[in-house]
Length: 170
Image 1 (spheres, rainbow, N blue to C red):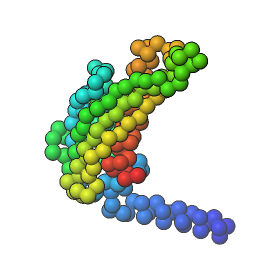
Image 2 (cartoon, rainbow, N blue to C red):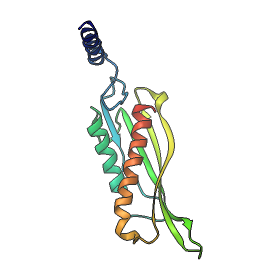
Image 3 (tube, one colour):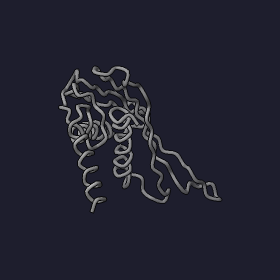
Image 4 (cartoon, one colour):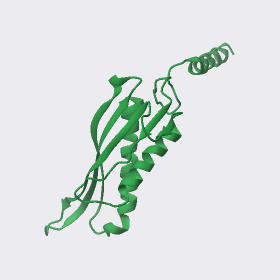
């Protein structure tokens, strides 16, 4: 019984410390300065040599949705306390596995973005960095029939990378 009371007391102290702290803690693990209230995320133009016409909108909307749903920051058009801007710099497909008769067995779709993150409340956390993710698929598959789903998976991973780097500091 004493153990149960001690465990319950420990859990209560953990919950109390999480709710009483004035730091920028959220349950998503985001560490945002308490005085940061807004975020601006500019449209990511597509400068890749091979262009998927929907990719810019998918990436930009996904990034805005992620920050709006996983933080308490208000999304503004310009000059947010936190600001994210960037571009799609790469969209490539290449074979990754070759069969005995010099045919591609597997292909890889890679998307690369360049991101500039500015934090006006804590300038030292700002960065400029490229992020790249890829998905492999069978060369037997019709690329046009799976392109949208591959892009969605890759974009979600890129958004997670940017989110983690900018406000989780992993």
